[in-house]
Image (cartoon, rainbow, N blue to C red):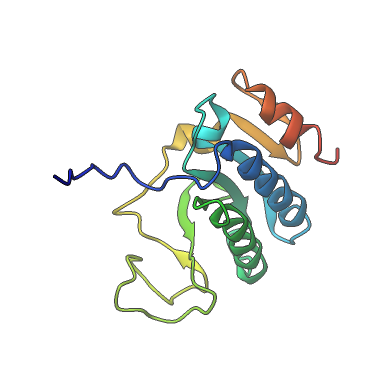
Length: 173
């Protein structure tokens, strides 16, 4: 007899996904910090907890509202590619300088209107997925994320040792 099992989402292809995800986040921060218009980068989500098998990397990037998103989208796709190597993912959430949640970086390399896109205004702004009806971040999380990585390091919660060793210790100050 064959049993059906319930699918609880992506399963990492490694027993220890945290180091892979943290290294991908570190590489993203190093690259994104060099992009004109990026004002702040913060780590949010399950990687700031001691969850042994998080399913993705969640980064909050505060940007100049008028910045071109091409370079940031490319850097985000590179991070996602590194996470995908172990069957996991990554998200880059965007907020404006005014603290308003803008949406997420679109996962597609080329930006054009797509039938299956969940963005409210697909194609209106390159690489912006403004699916605010599906995903939104609270003003409190945007104002005070658990871990700000750049331009200043600000810890608002106790962090797991691997976050300190793999991510924070390896970032330039």
